Image (cartoon, rainbow, N blue to C red; front, side, top):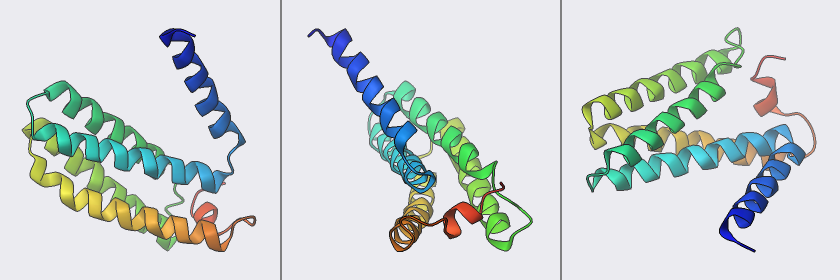
Length: 138
């Protein structure tokens, strides 16, 4: 098996994983990837690879948009989360434009807390639709 075939198998495996995941599991996957992107950006700031910084921050912003946009802003939790995600998006945009790593720790802390809350909610309601799904518009 060559590297191209291995990469194709990896992509297919990940696609299958996402397609067969529950909505709560998909949400947790998004948070895992978001935190990985934020950590990649933090590490890249210690070097000089501006492309790695930018790519990680832009992907993190895309995930935050995906988390924010379907929220039901008519609910208190939906409106609150939308505000938090908007704050995070703005901080990441500024971090990228200014090449300022000091904007990342606050975003990482907030996202870690939201991710942890979703892990707890997912565990508490493993098979039923819980607060995680109810926050998003149908």
